[in-house]
Length: 120
Image 1 (spheres, rainbow, N blue to C red):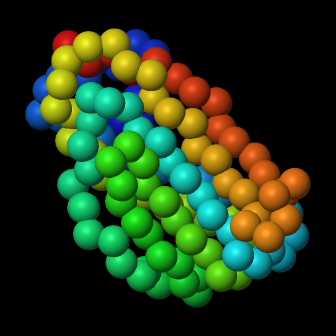
Image 2: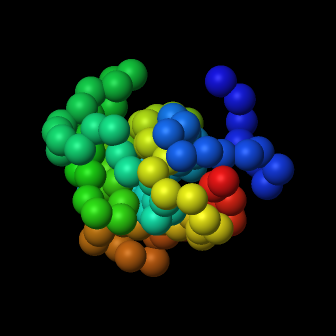
């Protein structure tokens, strides 16, 4: 397994693991995190389900263009979320950004940077 950067060649059929590192600086309730994916990739796991990981419970929902995470409660700390995608189309794609926002206090929000993905 290796990290993908601007020079990493991707090919149709490759397996890509998405890794989201979330740093929370204060306890928060009712939070939605949305990770948009590039058009040339499809998720391996398409079933939406409630998950429990390292003392954190959340609902993961896979949609057409994104994977959504819903949290009832996030305590202060660092969390890592991973899921797998399969490369299914060649081309030059924009990988979407990840956004996170409090559902009841939308002024608490953040987002990642967007990147380009070249699939040969």
